[in-house]
Length: 79
Image (cartoon, rainbow, N blue to C red; front, top):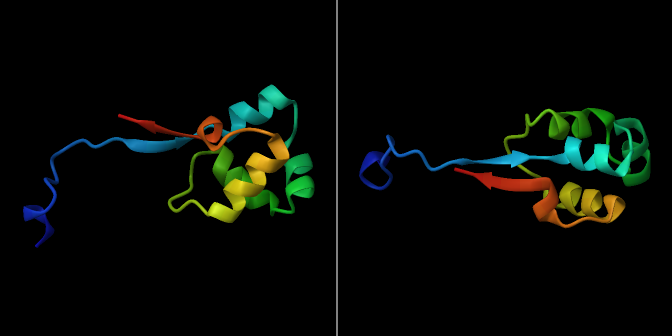
C-alpha cells in the first residue's frame, strides 16, 4: 500500500545519538546525569547505547540544558 508513496528500497539514513560522547567530553556519568536531569538511569542508558526508537523532546531538552549543549551535539542525521 505504501510502496507507491515511499520507495522501500531507498536508503534514507538514520538518526544517531551521541550522548555517550558528549557525556565523556563533559566528564559526567550516567548516574550523575540521571540525578541532575531527573531522568531514570535506564532511559539515559538507552540513549547512550543508541537504542531509542522515538526521541522524547522533554528528555532531549533536559539533556541539553544539563549538559549545556545544543541538540545537534546529541543527535545527528547519518546517511
